[in-house]
Length: 229
Image (cartoon, rainbow, N blue to C red; front, top):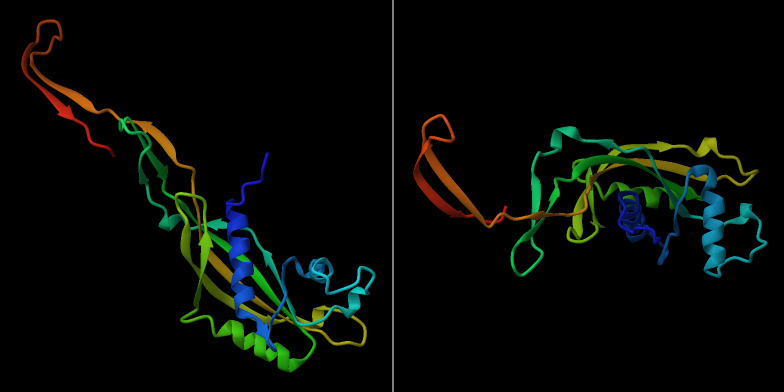
């Protein structure tokens, strides 16, 4: 069975990867970006550069060229105050208009991400810091996320949370490696698959006088054409 490329995590991981790649350009080239936790960052970037032909397979991990960026994802939490008890109308699925498609309202989700900026020189570190911090206006940046059909592309808020120097947490011998962590929250949406509903095209409305159904007298009968939801 094929893996669904539009699962929520895959959608927003790809969005964050593309967002960081578009921002980080240093000395005329894009800074490499990998999805990995800090303890796996060097192994991940080494594998990326080796796969793309920039490094020989036996190169020491300690001589990985800097700068690069690693991104890791935290645990999502729902934004319950934004959820709505209604459905998204999509449309008819057949020419007879007997079946109508709709979907539950998407669940708003907060997804934390940590963007790690790895550098060797303070000048490089300062430049990349400015590149990212200038994306936020009133604590928000924005990126496009591509969801499954029929939802498509959605303009997604990325909220600034914090920025910290974590350079002292890393080893690496005599060569200093600077590492700053940009913590953000993606205000995403968990979309649901559309569902088909049988449409009642006609409804008969009858009015009776009396309590007993067997003896009640029919006063009025009306046939109503039912429209789609």
